Length: 116
Image 1: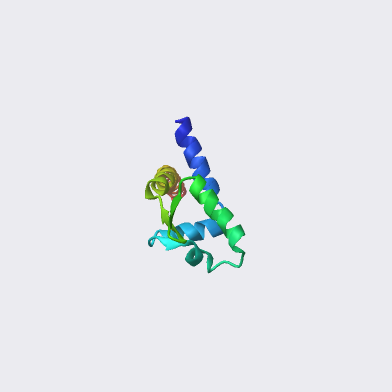
Image 2 (image 1 turned 120 degrees about the vertical axis):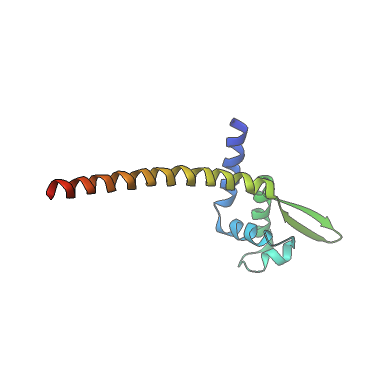
């Protein structure tokens, strides 16, 4: 459990930055060269590479050098773990809000019955 929690912590840390989220979003469409990934951002390549290192260190992406070009790919398993946790939380809170809505409706019906 501790390893799972640590894994989630590192994934959410990596995804906390909008630049890194944009990179992950782009890589969900398929592999890309570092230069291609860096184009939309107004920062130098060394600064952009720091973002890629965070994503790679936390296991959300992998990269390989092909000739003189570095290609990045998404690690769908790591992303799926974060998505699964979010889905569990969504289900939990949806159930809670459904129970709250039922309670409020019951209370409102009783109030109308008592008033009538």
